[in-house]
Length: 204
Ligand SMILES: [Fe+2]
Ligand SMILES: [Fe+2]
Image (tube, rainbow, N blue to C red; front, side):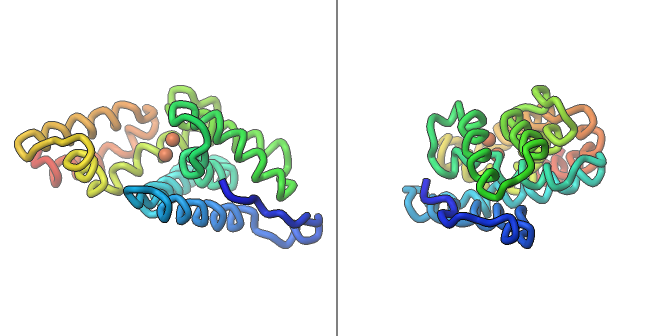
């Protein structure tokens, strides 16, 4: 990972800052660095994070969760992957460590920071979630797949070598797994949109 902000920030400077905006800028910058230095030019921000961010804000509003905590959790949930910090299987653990370092630079209040860190640590399943904010980020991480269906086809054809005869069944199984992984609350909210997506993409 490249440098965090190096200059010492004073309380006065921080008061005038929009922390969410600052973190968004940092995540975009790291995503750009990843894209420019990876073999597949994967664009974390445009292919994944921006959708998780949007979906998590919508869920936070629907569920009356703390929007600032959810925004920061969504922006930072995959920071360890974007910055290639440690193993993929541990990215929720390493992400939590990195996020704490990033937010501490802005003297972000500890109580709110712990809630953001919980979103990151628990984002891999809404079943692990302990708070409403955890649930918003974990469910948004799944809903983001439905916002970027071209990415799913790219995964099928180019990474998993699925052929044209098998792709419909493969996508159907991926949709069903994702839907099943959502919390019961979000399954209900998403039910109609899910049916429409299945109808359009799978002809069901
Ligand atoms: Fe993740
Ligand atoms: Fe993610």
